[in-house]
Length: 191
Ligand code: GAR
Image 1: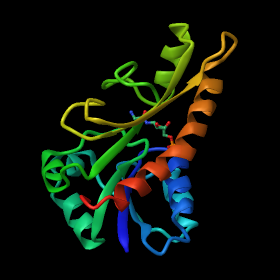
Image 2: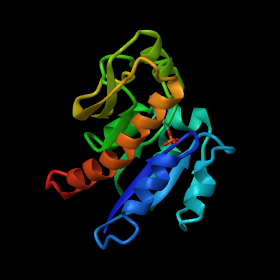
Image 3: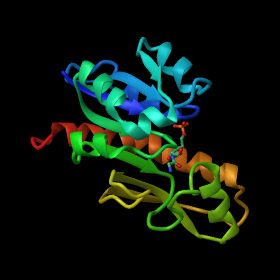
């Protein structure tokens, strides 16, 4: 069994979707969810599926040791960020080289960087009059949204779209492709 950890700070719809995708798998499972937010919806979502979730402080994520201990305890092979809004420590990046991935709700390098997350991204896309947007799945490195790209796909943005409508379309792409990309990575021998 290959174990995944999901890091999430918010509602956790991707975390739930990924957990459900692997629920019947004999090879891959979401073993644990880690968050920096006690109030995040992700706890209830994955709790309903019997997946344990834990909260650590911003300082603990920045320092890394207790997070690493938790990942080791659950024998985690791949760390998946899904709406996680904290920086990842060097301790973790060194412990999981090319085994930490993130999803970003735009076509990076467009609309990436520290203040670009969640609805801020879709608001900026609409304000700029973009005709398309999409998702980027990438490896983590020590800079926001700058790691090597694993997968991108796009969707249209229509002139009448609100940021909420764009968010819904982008979430749709995330639900289809993030679990598939995770599965492909875990089935590659280098992991
Ligand atoms: C997702 O759209 C994800 O791409 C985005 O946050 C949302 C989380 O939704 N991540 C970022 O913006 C990272 N910079 P969810 O909590 O419902 O999965």
